[in-house]
Image 1 (spheres, rainbow, N blue to C red):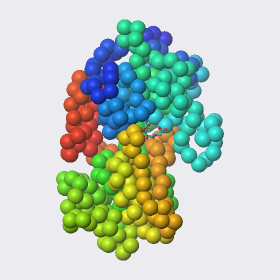
Image 2: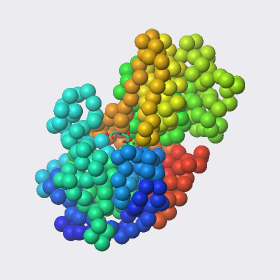
Image 3: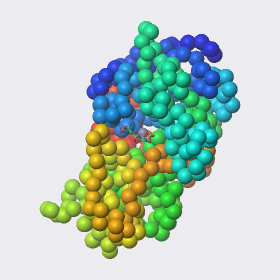
Length: 375
Ligand code: AHE
Ligand code: ZN
């Protein structure tokens, strides 16, 4: 198959708000510094739904969504040295070129090498590898894992230990890694108090990682009472249902009351700007740090009284947990194999590619943490 156009099935979104449609697509061979991957498994993340719905200002159609995949390298283009045919790999929506200003800074994981073409749904040479009857289809997040074959830049993929089931470690492509990094890359969480707003996959990952690094008190917050048992299973000590507070009591005031002045660390894992404000304001005066992880819809803005920051709270955020995927994901896979990092526990639903739209519906039900699609 090397060097040839491949025909395979993919879930295509033809327009904002439309359900995905299973189509036969043509996937061109990888060009220089590109890798063609047979995708075996993919998770579905709220960001796929966000873009599908039309709320993403960067959204382009038609498109093949998906960014939480696992697969096997089918072929490589000229000049590819980081992965080989047959390697088990995870595509990375946050590339790591190790050469750009961002990578070399040592201060961020936000590689600049392919981000602008990625945001325009194209490969780095400004073209697409996907087509249907001659019509070009956009790539998504540099990954497009809702296709049985995809092509990614060589800086946007990492090989992982073949002992690890791809059916599980595909989830390291987004949610679990994002949550893990948001915690381990901040110093001081050991021995500190933490509040986590939102108990989806990201929130549970933040809870699990806070527990792993030794936070002294972990408070989970959600409006769904069904999340209490989930949060506790992942290591939360307490659960607060923010929809069940006494009339007029705000969640930030309640948390300040029960923590003698506020939390050392808070995390927004919801993407809701009102929750982001509550998370910041629930921080302790003088030192509390609030991290935004959730993606807010187009046009949304955060606000608080500047006094909240003047009096020593810090508002920050991270993308993909600040993780450099090529450097750090192999270690995370080993931590998973060694039992330190949970992955299996997040998988609540399974779907086939033919039923991928059902997987999107699963996400809206309160009992779904992650749905994994068998490609
Ligand atoms: N295109 C969106 C931004 C979406 C966004 O913030 N994406 C996150 C990853 S979400 C994973 O589920 C991210 O890492 N962004 C960094 C980047 O470079 O895009 C919008 O609103 O414009
Ligand atoms: Zn995601």
